[in-house]
Every structure is written in structure tokens, then in C-alpha cells.
Length: 112
Image 1: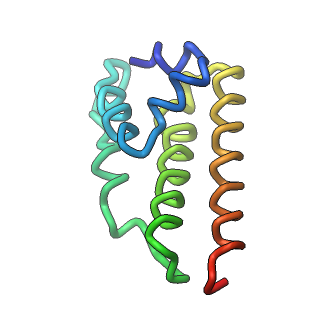
Image 2: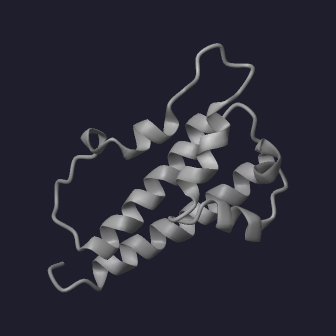
């Protein structure tokens, strides 16, 4: 399943990293024969105890924040040791755009 990420095609990566598919994309990556104990990435990402909300955000912005967190986790923890430089750059670009969208939404939000 690593091959899909290593194709480094923006359209494929956007589909794999979409909010409705990212947890399903991470699932097969938990079964790596090179790792002796199976990591539980999906369990970690869905556990609400890892998220501390300091400022109350609207649901739309909060879902974008969660998506940015999941993509960063995927980049740094799940794919960190196997990712090629070009894929790393593409995922960084996707992250930058998602982070800019979150900041823009916060700036244009009524309470802020």
C-alpha cells in the first residue's frame, strides 16, 4: 500500500488524504512485516484524549484542524522512514495549503 503514496501523484494523494478516506488509507500501513509489533495508528488518531482544545472553534474549522493533524501524523510517523523526497515535498505542499485554509477560516470567522 506504500506504493500508492510513493506514486507521488497529487490527485491520488489528495484522495488518500481526504477526510473521509485517510483512516482507511492508514489502516493497511499498520501491517508492515518489517515492524515486529503492529502499530495502532487508527486507534491513536481516533482517540479523543490526544486532542486538547484550548480555543472553541466552529465544527467546520475543527474538522480541518483534525485533518491537518492526521496528515502530519501520516507524514512524520507512518511514512517517515520510507518516504522519498519528492513525496515528502508533495505532502508538505498539501499540508501547507490545508494549514493556510485553516488560518484563513479562523481569520474570517465571526468570533475571531
